[in-house]
Length: 201
Image (cartoon, rainbow, N blue to C red; front, side, top):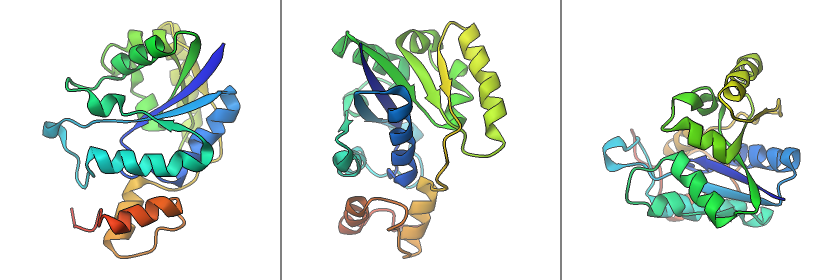
């Protein structure tokens, strides 16, 4: 059975930490395909400094090109509220012979059972995550037990963490500092060419 690693997030912007995490779990799971799914944020929940959907999609596509991964606009195109449960079920229908692995960050992993319809999420995919801090692993392993008790599968691995965040990238751009160690060169160029993240909060 094919394995697909699905990585959801706002990606505002995508950075080297995202890519490192996806590459690590591509190896851990043995996935034949990696699919990034940028989230559409409803207008009433607009985050500060959130680039538009088209820009975030474009940056993701530029960033994953060297890896041979794909980017899905499935959530961006959805008019209704964007729920992970719906996304994973849609992907399961698109790839009926594949096993899905859903990769998410530490913070999101630790709240997964409070998401919209978590049982549908757990039915659709194995949940993958890694800690972003040295103290996070024990808590995540304990939460993985709760996920298994709820009928799901969880894969928590202590992969090396790159101390990069989207907030850090946006701040550096705003302060006119270089971001070449934080994002891929193509993303750095895109941010400059489209004058993204230059305005204060």
